[in-house]
Length: 115
Length: 112
Image 1 (spheres, rainbow over the protein chains, first blue to last red):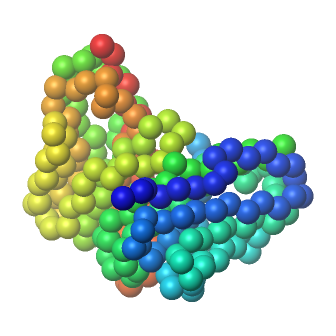
Image 2: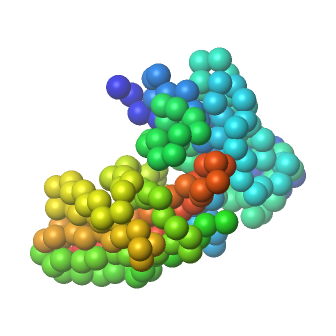
C-alpha cells in the first residue's frame, strides 16, 4: 500500500503571497490532519478533515484553511504569507475520525520557506 | 490544554549503549504514541500505548506507560546508528475534542 504523499516537497514564496499544499492519504483512510512543525514551536496541530468536513481545529489564524475532496485527498491553503509561516507542513492520515488513538501515518512533509 | 514534556532534549551515545527517553504529561494520560522522525522528514509510527502499565516492544525499542506518574518512557537497548533521529511522544487531549498534542522531541545521535 502506498503511503501518504505530499506535494510539493519544497516551496519558496515571498511575504504576502498565498500557497496551496496537497496531501493524498493512504488508500482507504478517510481522515486527514495537517500539522505545522517549526524549531520554535515544535509540532502543532492545524486541523483535521473527515468526509469533506473540518472536524477539529487547532489554534491558528484564519489565514490557514483547508479542504478535503470526495476521494479523501486534502489541500491546505495559507493566505497572506508571513515570515513566521516558514515551516515543515506535515499531513497525516488515519482510518477513522474522532476515535482516540487511531494511529496516524505521516507524509514526508512540504518544506515552505517564506522570504 | 495538555502539554507533553520530553527529556532529555538531546542525547549523544556511543553505539551499543542503552538509553531512555521520557515523556511527561501535564494531565492524565489515557494513552500515548511514540514516533521517530528523520531530520526534515515525516514521522514514522513506532508504537501506541493505551493502558496503564502497558509495555510494548519493537525490535530493540521498548515503551511503557505509567498512568500514575502521567509518564511514558522509551528505552533503546544496544543502540545503533540507525536509531538516530528525533523521537516524539504524542497524545490526544481528553474531553472529546481529540486535539493531538506532541512533545518537542528528543534528538538522538548514535556514534559508531
